Amino acid sequence: MVNNKLNFKIYFLIIFFSSSLYSQGNFGVNIGINDDNFGSIENLKTKIDDYNLDIKNSTGFQFGIFTEIDLITFYIRPELNLIFSKSKNASAIQNNESIEIAEHSYKSSDLQLPIIFGYKVLGPLSIFGGPSFKYSLSESSNFNLDEIKDKYSVSLLLGSRVKIKSISIGLRYERGLNSKEVLIINANGVNLNDANVDLTTNKLSLNISYPPPCASKKNTSESLSSMDSKNDLLSWWYPFINGIPWCLYFAQR
Image (cartoon, rainbow, N blue to C red; front, side):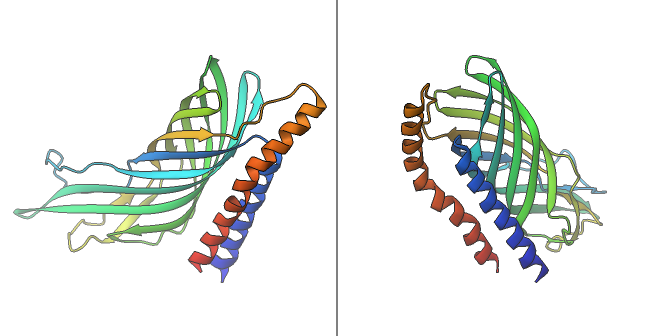
């Protein structure tokens, strides 16, 4: 019952935030792919470091909405994103005279609220950084892990982007500021001697964003015409955006 009330408050916040973006006028859609590098097995006493394991990082994706406040040389860009991440890690362990391989796969979905502060360096190039606040919506692992009590986390987000007309292409690196190590209770029969799984955010992402065209006008009549055109465009997105949190809410009940 408590979790349902908490989820309801979170989804209400999403609706309020998306409504605020709609009213601001500088609204856009953000999509991206992630190179996730987390979920590694730590604190292993019998790990074989030089053992060849052909395990590659997994790719996740994200999508969301944003608004951007232009301050001539600087800009502020709050976003609201849904992030789907997955990772795969493996370690070789020496148990007596045999070698065992522990493979860990992990999936998660998070609600992310980054607040980005950008600086326009030269022409279309800018650099940015800022805090990223996340709330965990779901988690799954092939290991039996200890309960993850803290659903909230804070990360530092750094990156750069190139903006050509209305399209922005950016590269981001995100690293968690609060450590998130979880005790492994059972690793599918492999004895890991009280090892942990490191779930601290550590990802590289490539993002593309596209705001609806909304050129600034010099006189009132042109501004009103622009506003009508913009509202026609946003009316397509507004029901979809507000439908997302409700679908998630009822799906988790």
